[in-house]
Length: 511
Ligand SMILES: Cc1ncc(COP(=O)(O)O)c(C=O)c1O
Image 1 (spheres, helix red, strand yellow):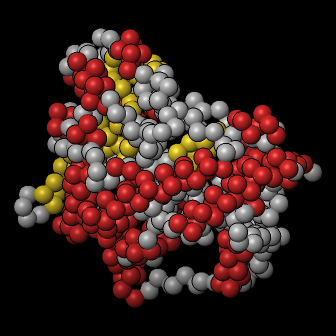
Image 2: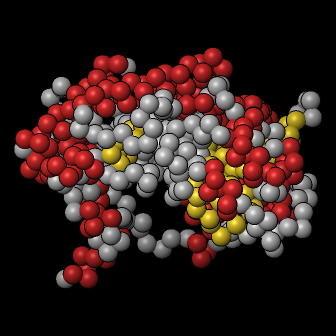
Image 3: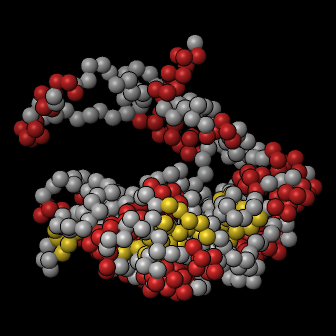
C-alpha cells in the first residue's frame, strides 16, 4: 500500500485574499478595428443595464490565483490521481487530447447565431457524431440536445407521450413501468413527463421478474424503462422476451444507457428491441463528470419515432450542412441550440481516437476489470455478493456490507470513508436500493492490474480493521484534507454556503 496523506491547507476563500489594486489580467482597451466595428461599448449598453457600482470582484495577481487553486486542488481527489470506482458513474480516465480539441479557439469562439455557412465545421462534427452514436446504439436517428442522462430520460418519456398522443392512445396509456433496480432518475423522469410509475421487482438472479412484468403490463402501459446491463452489473438475458411483452401490449421500450461501457461495439440496444435510448456522454465518452457536470445525454430513436425528435436537426444535402426546423411532430426543444457542445466535442475526439476496435477493447477491459475485482473481493470473505454469485458481471459489481455490519457495527458508509484514508476514492454506496448496505464498484478500463490489486488490498485491510479495531473505521477518514463530516449539515440547505454573497448575508444576519 502507498502511504497516503492529503494536503491540508487552511485556505481562505478567494474573496478574502488579495489587496485593492492587484491585477492578474488587464482587459484590453476597445480600440482600433474593434472600436471601428462596435463603437464605444459603454454607449451600446442600454442605460438601465450599465452597472453603477463596482462588481466587488477579488483583486489578485496571477501568481496568487494560481497558488490558491493549486492548493485547493491538493485537497481534492480526481480520476487523474488514481482509482475512482464509483459504480454506475463510469469515472474513467479522460484522455487529454479530448480536452485539447474541445478548447480549440476555432470551436470555442463560435456563436450559435452565426450564419450556418460560417459554421460548417462544427455542424459536420455534430452530424457525424450523431451518426456514430446511432451506429453504436443501433438506433435510426440521434438528438444531441439533452444536457444530462436524466434530461435524456425526460426527452425519451416525452417522445413516448407524443407517440401515443399521435396514435390516439395517450388517455389510456398512463403507466410507465420501471424495475426496482433502476436509477432514481428513471421514475422521476417518468413522473415529470406525466406518467404513473409502476415498479416491477427483480428476481433472485437480479434480473427483471418476467412473471411480475406480465402481470402489470396492460392496455395502460405506455412503455418500460430498462437499464441493461442493470445496476447490479447483470445483463438481462430475457431482453428479447421482455421487448416482445411490451411491444405486444402496444408499449415502447426505453433503454437507460447511462453506462454503455460494457457493451460498446458488442451489443446494441436497438438490436435488443429498444425504441428509445439515451447515453451519458459524460460517463462513457471522455468527459470528466465528477462533482456534477458538465454533461450530455443524447437520445437515439427507432425509425418510427424519428419525427418526434427535438429541433433544430443538423442535416446534410451532400454538399452543405443545414439546420432543419421543419418537423411537424417534433416535441420542440429541450435545450437551447444544439446541446452541450464542449462535451459533444470531447465525445467526437474520444470515438475518433479509439476507433471501432478501440471502443470494443475498452468494453472488454472494463468487463474484465470488474470481474477481476468481483472475484478478488469475494475471496476476502468479509463482503457478501448478493444475487447470482456464479454469473459473470458486466462493467460493475455490487457487494453488501450487511454481514460485516452485523458482526462489527461497521457500515458501507464507514468502509467507504476508510478507503479514502488509503488514497482510493470510495465506491458508490447505498445504491442500488435493492441491496442492503450496498457498495457498487466500477473500475472501468483505465486502471491496470496493480491498481486493482491495491484496491483489493485496501478492502481487505478495512475488513480486518473492522474486526480488530472497529473504532478506526468508524472514525475514518483521518488522512484526508477534511475528516468525517456531519452528513446532515454537509448537505442541508440551511447550513450550506454556496457563494460569497450567501456568506456575507449569513455573517450580517448573525451579528
Ligand atoms: C443508470 C443511470 N441512469 C441515469 C443516470 C442519470 O444521469 P445524469 O446524472 O447525467 O442525469 C445515472 C447517473 O448516475 C445512472 O447511473
